[in-house]
Image (cartoon, rainbow, N blue to C red; front, side, top):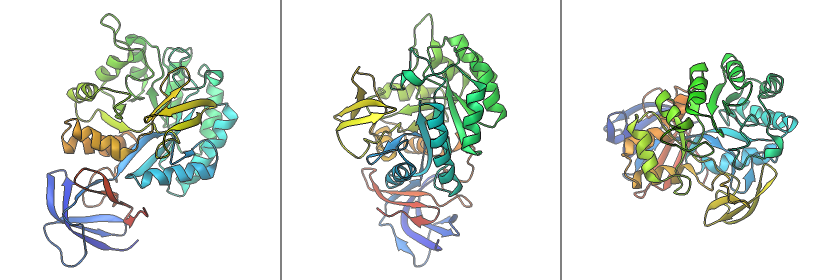
Length: 369
């Protein structure tokens, strides 16, 4: 971790894009100044905060549930695409398998490689399970939750729950008491059932619109409940899962609501072909990942693409950056990142004119491309 000065940069700060230099010491940003002597020139490129992905299953041909090494390699793949903070997401599986995978994530978290783990299951709706393996779905079970909580050794950060299931509200109580974020997702809940979950302490919507009952004018369901509750809402901005108008609708409720995620599987960066997710065959064609039934099965998205697409779709640069960095960091309670300001971790993405990644810095060290 070397002290450094980055000059000739356009830096996205809370005050907008500022031309000048960044000073870094001890892995932290120490200043954004108009001029500094010496240092490394960034050639006038734009610098934005490192991306924070709170929902990702794999990438670069690596499925995070296959082995501890694959989990680590998937994290490193996404890091090269600007994701400097990763929350490992685990799909529905037998409890023993989930405990084993949570232990891998805990080891990576202890080493500072990831922010922890997200359990996307197994307490989800059969009706809205999407690509979650229905053979392993369970009704909310405090004993199973306790086992997984213990396996994570303090690193379980998020659990997605379908609030209409028997015992779901009590499981949300247990999650909140344990300091775990309860998210509403993969649910066929009514508006009222969803609001009950948010009233009980759920504070996140898992990939809004996808894997949940759609809006109807007489039964608005979990989508409008999430927006009315004012919680952050994950969105998969790959041009497949959501129409751009959906992002605008979320933003209309407040720019702090929108959270960009990838929901990426191992196919991200690996091309079209056949893959496996949670024991089910996934077919990727033209970047779209689907089960044989046609149900979408995660994505082949990376955070740099999600960010660039948001900007192309008319989302203002500072708003798109917040959705990719500050907002998800806030979800996890990470106050030391997500913005470029003195005292924050030097997590940076240097972008080309088309918003493609030029270089990535994490904790004051350049990431090897």
